[in-house]
Length: 140
Image (cartoon, rainbow, N blue to C red; front, side, top):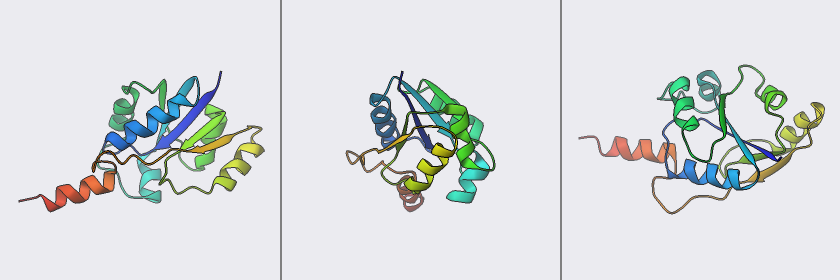
């Protein structure tokens, strides 16, 4: 069985998220999605609009997702111990140091392959920040 792990904030679900998760699911037998904790998302990007427990519920209900879990507080790489993925699917725009991820996986005895998912461009609604910007511009 090939376990694929995908991570993200998933603050405002949009078609780009669905594209990301569908492609990730096609890489293996099981897709585990790690939903970022509010505190981690705030530290790495910005404070989410939607609380983590609701984001987790939303992601859990998506068809490609076999299991959705909340990420860990503190060292984000500790989630590798829990999930033990064979493949880590990263979004085209996720800013992670792939070499560091592989090093952290190796320290934990995990033979990990990293795959970048293609950009979804079939809609202008392909990014949370783009959607937020559009909403702000349309406020009357």
